[in-house]
Length: 517
Image (cartoon, rainbow, N blue to C red):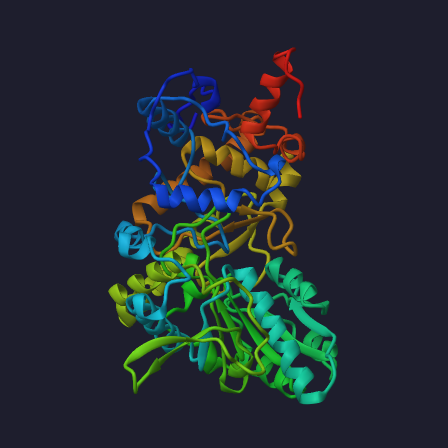
């Protein structure tokens, strides 16, 4: 059954281990100064708003450690195996960078400290911006946006501000390729734009006729990922830039796939005006499950004035770094304080340790791994390459399992779930939406050839099972801590209620003398 078995503990909620009197940690006594401040603060709150208990479980330290260790054994992460999520760049990240972010000097600073007390932190951010400028060809960066989609929103607001100031009116439309990440149209819509799709040609790149037909003086800009989500470099990027700029529209670079070109080509040199980078993808922060993230936005010189405050400047006279808050013409603040410092620190450490040549080699290794796997997996029966057949890919590739679906009744979903039994995380499936039964793989540069070969062999084995033992695949996974689930039920809001609340309600229901609040 795949030669892999995940731990499966009959693990209850931490509250179920609770026993009166058990102690795992004793906090230090509250000194008189803190107590007096707390009392002055709380006396202004309504009585019903003040808790008299946190309702925490009473457990010993061994119970806590063993509980969460067992939970971790029932989970999957990049630390336990290959994680080939296409368009997510789930690569292994150096532990030393996490250690740096956890140092007391980095983790215990407060955003309201005076500038003179955090000069080291400001210098790191200042140097990080200079590195991002060198890598992308932009003029300045704001490090404030806290994720890629947040960066997209900032970019769209900059486009809106640029046209409003220059023309005295709003441009209403933003163009997005039909293969784009879903956050592109969502971010543009949040910024108040009408989103229109641009078609993809059979070569997997933007269809120039579709783009030219869509362009007019009401288009604020085009949001483009390059390499795109099919893993193909937009070969007509020069012509795309000409078309967009001929209407004084702006070209936005979605940096989700920057891992394929970092140190090789700069988006600014290609003609892009605005860019966001996913530092948590390309530059060394383990991500997934909602964070952490960081999405710095860079712009060309004529757009610098619109960047959100603060920006970091070095005062030559006073020999200090300072945060510049007063920025006339800016779109305004987009986040409290200034960015996700832990992620920014990791990114700086990664870039400095790798150097320009190291980043270039990493990108080339990622591209090599992608094309190696594509050459193997595209030859498996039931598999086809839907766009740009015969072309080299960059960091990722998309297969179609539509023929497999027609011939066996099984497709990308079933294959992905069965791969779990072989110890591999499911790749991205059913994206991009223009590919039927899409199966999207991004190996990154951190996996060995032996690991890539193991994945290819597992994929081949699962495809053969689809033809020979289809019920085995249809009922997969079998070797994971949780077997096949009802996905509709799992997504229901009631199912997603935090577990401690579920436990609390169970306890209240069991106690007939207690009325729920």
